[in-house]
Image 1: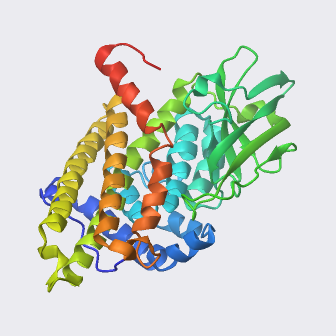
Image 2: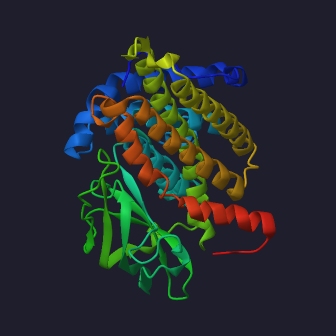
Length: 390
């Protein structure tokens, strides 16, 4: 990845950002250039998570940036969160996943639905990365249909006994806590904070991934795990609770995908200006210019989409369907740009000397997780027609 990165801003969107937003972008960008770019290809090739980045992510405020300062967050707005996710994902989708999960899927539900005791116990340590969390919703047989989950718990005195399994869980192999969604005896879904070390709780790692290779993925297995009732999130139950968390994560992804697209565009543009064929830089050829012009157009549209969505989020007006539209559009946009950018680089595009192929493979996960490409289409279809096609 090139260190002299310039982010495209064809429509002067910077004018819509505050000075604080730009400072946050610059500091996050500098961190990515210093700490992520030089090492990420090696870790992706090794299929290893660079765990030393956890402490640094905490130091730059990437964990729960919108969480109030009294709980260890930075108290920033939603556009600041989006900008941070954009810059981190420009480095790597897997590193952004680590930050997204910690922020939107672990800290967010504890902040929104947790007791005062839970907030004070967990949020400050999660904000620094002293402890790490994961989010257990998806099951081996229930992905796009989470309401069908079979993970369940039964009351037993001051505790509950939890049984079940979750899979495709980012951060699970090293997480200290898991925010797990399971059904009570009345089939009502609740969130529980399960801590590493509880008997019967294991987190086997998922291997042989072609995608998100620098991210740590695993399962959550619950075999008669005794969880104190005080670890149940009291503020909200039902499927709407985890879906609110997913809305926050999907919003961050809509920005993160722009970061991937920018990096691929930047790489393709620079390469096209330097690569000479038939006596001219390939940037002088019509078909390469078509690719670059289309990339810039789609990035510009996505930037406006996520910025406006951020404004709506700041006003607490963003709907789930609006978030679905942005997540679906922007990830698809980034995938198309990665594919076209790879072609601009020819054979060089498949090597680890450039970031494009790694981004391309990572996006195959991003387009599936937090709601698949097709499911987001149906969420929008339901919103438009009033008919649920699930």
